[in-house]
Image (cartoon, rainbow, N blue to C red; front, top):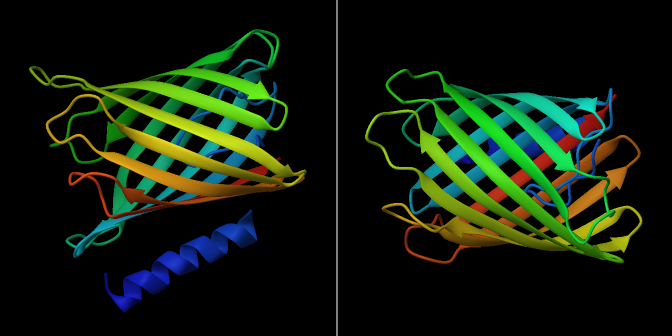
Length: 232
């Protein structure tokens, strides 16, 4: 990664903090929370992965809206830059999330989450991603698990099953610490990485940062994700 690209990455994160909802506990794992009815939220993601002399830098901008207290939808625009390509529009994502029951009313909090990836490059097939979410909270400690299924919309291409699991702790009223692990069950080159993180909340502004490392040879060496949310 060149000095110019490194400066650009730091600038994206700095602008995110200035720009800084639902208070996301994690950077990579999806929790069971949904926006309240009528809630609008803008999110800015900065996502960086690197291995050897290769890297991928993505900026995601999302608008999320709560249709009902248990049902939310969102749309993303995704820009990407790599060591081989300049910064450009990559794809759009459309999401829907439904939470079963009221938060904390059952033994486990559960939700379903679906995304549709609309690729800009028509040489790449569109993709759907489905997540089953389970979560349990004990006082200030929360465990969350995601079972993930990805399917490219192309004949003859097998789906990929993944997982994400995380624990978080409320350190103080405005600060959450977390530890996440994400990987594949299937696929030709399954990946696995672990990422500690912090989430800071201040009224309508939330900031989340996780820095992770790969745990096998198929994984990237470095994973960084910064998320900034603003509710209005």
